[in-house]
Length: 399
Image (tube, rainbow, N blue to C red):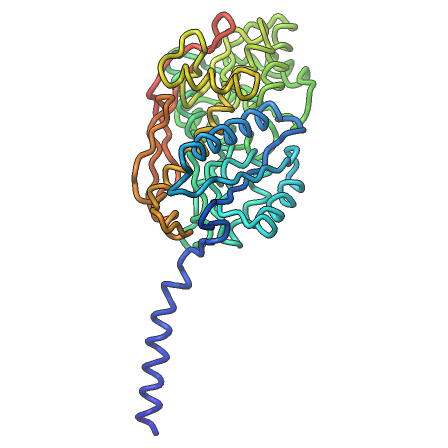
């Protein structure tokens, strides 16, 4: 009796040992993969305050999916893209994600839009084992994961992170221009707080005190109080944790006050719309950036063809946002292709973490992930608006 109990005890403990790694392993779904297609989802702002991001990003995603499908798909499987409008509203992003996971059975979420919206919806994906790939926010929560929480390993990001890119750009500006009274105006949300973190860390590292720290609520359109405060605080450089409208609004307000100060924007300000809509109000703006913005009259080779194809498809000029959307889908396809013919969630995960490098057509730094690092790269440029165009000032910056 005791012998058989002992044997049973050994069997139970052996079973417990085999169960341990499985419990700590990341559960990745196989839903959305059939013989003929791979279903991927995305939620974008198509109707709200940042639709100037959401619409071109969606176009870029669609364009890439069409190109991939026209070339025979991924090992013969066509990409089926499910696109939902969040209106940049976290509640709507949650509902859209639930629908895509439960009804559309998406295999992965590719390039979802915005810090507050992605943050609100991501746990729905992780609980279901759905990968969250290359979201349109460079906040730290999109790539930093707790090894003790295996489902958090489902997140990967290929955008330049706000904290690191802000630090690199601030360091460059303070060192080369010898500013002594740095200030910041930031959007009071997940995105803006990341920019604030980067600013604060770098200013502290350089043993400087911020002369002024001011914020605004997402969706605000009047920045007169913030700009007046920064002017009276004697700022000599203003870091902007803003998007498009707010960048133009703040710089326009400074011009109105006759305040000639240097502005440095975080990466979301580095888009074509800022000089196109802001005109002379934004001349001279510096910005942190991940890659050079191509212009039709100076682009060459594949990039020139790509710009012409985009214009033909969508009747408008391609911009930074379109490139980021296009690259998100192309990066997905690259790793899905590498995962092999019998695609599964686990094989996709292994492919992403393999250290294989994806290179885009726009000469961006290479995308590369590992088992411990789910952020593609942190190499930053600084660009400046000169005569209505973004011009490269300095590349290859690390903080």
